[in-house]
Image (cartoon, rainbow, N blue to C red; front, side):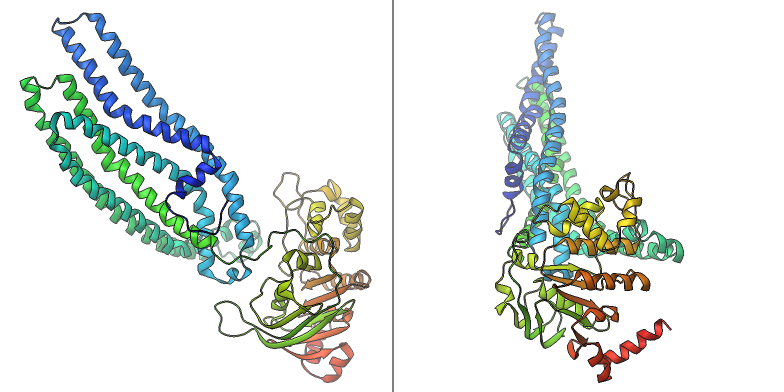
Length: 595
């Protein structure tokens, strides 16, 4: 649906037509019909009715002759009132079709983008703008194009009607209307430019708003009472964004609408020019009223509808520029692929002189980092926060591939493997694990989406992480919805949620299990029990523990101590304690926590 190419004005109509062709075509046809009704047909219908009425009044026609023009006029009024309702219905259906097709396409594209964009504020703002504005802009774009065509047809039909009577008025109307059209386009661009400028402020006040209303921050809001402080921050960012937007919109409004007043004055002047033809009889009273009605309708169209449509299309055009940038960002090939059903046989994984720095950062996280992970052994990366431990996980799992040096998986460069292979090989429990508000059973099954996880397998991993007793207390057992999204949902404690995340990893068939601070939400007793369970669960598996707490080192065959992006010590627990270095210092410090 969204391809890597340049998007232009034509795509404002092409994309909606692709997802809802019948609705879009009918909307355009109705716009053209609506363009003709208030102009030529109403002018002619009004003239027919008024002239017939005058003839009857003057005794030149029978009273019964008024019924036909009256029915014609009423029928035109009925059709005119009916069309907007039909258009609203079609527009709603078009919007629904756009949401059903475009939003999944946007989300799929977002999921395919290179992980590096998570570190770029500018890229995130672009992505958010397109995600939030594209569906609504495409829906309104169909209306704007319909209104633009309606305005053009309406103006053309009135020009033809007027040209027969007073042709010299046409150039005057054109001279005033063309500049208004361009002013509207320029105004639309300025309004969208202001929305680009304000988006960073919108992101900030939206964040504060979410913090002030979300369930996740409820406890701290209550305890710390920071609502007033965040409201001040919210208002500061909101006012900045509002000021920028209002400045652009005010300029646009004053410029465009002041010009519209001139069109009304032209209409009054035009009406005066028709007085003489009316007096000398070359123009009937009915035709006079019909032409005046049509001309003022046309001037209103030029002054309001045409400019609004032009402004809307100008906004849409600017979004097409953003959409072009969005779809042409760098993708990760195979990012949306499912894990391979059959994993490769893992033998070794080696970092050889790897140097890496995050995008838009000058300082490297580490330089010339080297180590080897071998099949069936347990490893621990230990270090203080910010030492670079989690970055190693991101490189191992292929989230980042812009590094110097080599990362060799079975003596083959990691970047040459498809994403589906890496997904099948690694299973990760992140420190900031996700809490999926679906059933407990489905939470666990997400760890192995390439296969249909059996109920007995789910029971096994639930038991292995020590959740069996708690599951027995849930309303529907492992089929209970977790969180608070559903009426029948039940909430878990932080430690229980973490055990669910660990169970999800254990359900995976991945040969390499990575645990990034896996016991951060657990108390010391629960932590000790989890590590005792890990010792049994990880038999004959390759595991990597990432932590600044040393409980996991009891399981490790080899410990890498990371400091300032470099491995400063390595060995098992006894070897590292005997070295009396950073590990010994951390060991002694953490030992005192429990004394």
